[in-house]
Length: 103
Image (tube, rainbow, N blue to C red):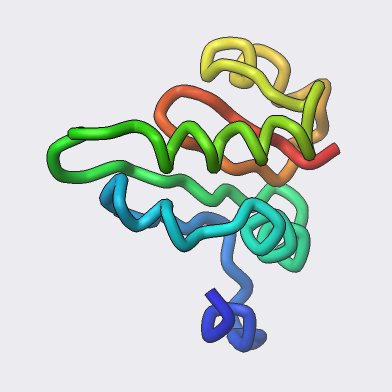
């Protein structure tokens, strides 16, 4: 993600990151939140988990850290879509059907 932060000529509005459950092991919620904060308002970072979901341990730990830092700014997908206008299109992180948005 550090390399992506260096792109200034063409700001990102969305990034889809395909990842295995094991790759969540080395990912830190602080780093991901900092990355999203560095983007323009309305930016979406979406994680799509690929491959077999043999264990959810790493994903659960990562999402717990996101929840601890961004709570109460956590909504399921339907709630987020309903409230997106009133939230003024916040930057957010989406994993499965949960949105963790930055207030």
